[in-house]
Every structure is written in structure tokens, then in C-alpha cells.
Amino acid sequence: MANPDYRALADKAQAEADAAQLDNVRDRCLRSAAAFLAMAQRQDLGDRNRARREAELAAAATDTDSASPDTPA
Image (cartoon, rainbow, N blue to C red; front, side):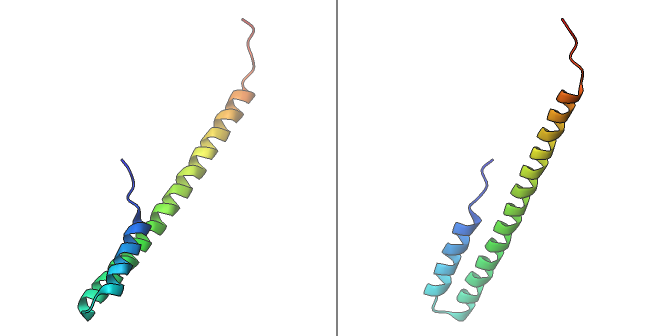
């Protein structure tokens, strides 16, 4: 499943806020932009944590492989 581009959605909401003539519409668009930026930050954090966990698992697998004695065939 592809992740949405929250930063692009935030930019679009910001552009809509800039173009809005009504205060309530502008406020709604600004709230949307802020929410999309928060989602982008959470997504970035999740991606960094996933990459860290995968690196730790790969390092652990390498350590396990090098620690086991080679048995002659």
C-alpha cells in the first residue's frame, strides 16, 4: 500500500487557504495544512524507526551467522 504524500496535501491546503476569501474557509484550510504536516512528521518517524529496526535485525543476523561454527561437509 502506497503512503500518501502528506507534504503535497499540506501544500495544497495552504494554497487553498491563501486563495480563500472567507475567514472560516481559510481557517479550515490552515487546520488541514497543519494536520497534514503532523501526519508527515509521524510518517517520517515511522520510516526512521522501521529502518533502524531493520538495520538492527540485519546486524543481529550477521552476528548470529558469524558466531556459529562452520561444520565440515
